[in-house]
Length: 172
Ligand SMILES: [Zn+2]
Image 1 (cartoon, rainbow, N blue to C red):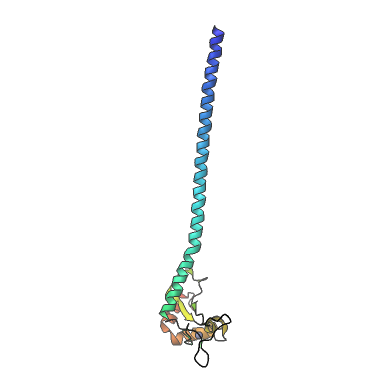
Image 2: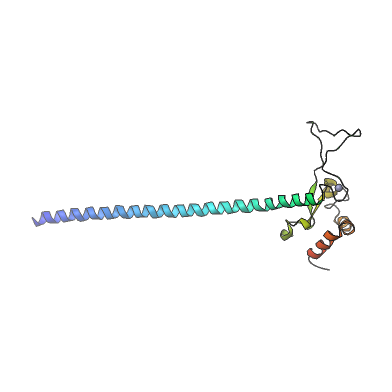
């Protein structure tokens, strides 16, 4: 009789233990799942932050470029070239091989290079609108002939010249 009772007790305790174990396992599973979700959400947030950081400066630069273009009335500030279609001698628009009018693509140029002056990267004061020739292709261009460009700026755009002088740093 006692033996049976003992066996019965053993069965009961074993069942209880199994129940406890399964509860523990479920608990562990839940914890694991929670941890995984947290890890995933952190990873997601990091990815999003990266994406935003990547996109934000670009957005700022586009706005900056537009501001520079509008301030200069879409005209090269050095030679006066406009973004209008080029014309032939008889006044008809010059067309490319595909039959589209050829336009001058004006460039918004950073006076203080954005790589070295990230704080002025999106400041419209730090921008000037140039045609490709005056920007980087011609002998007298901002990128090929910095001294000439500085002298041109001093003579023709005193306000921006003074601003550059104040912000360029390392006074001599
Ligand atoms: Zn020009």
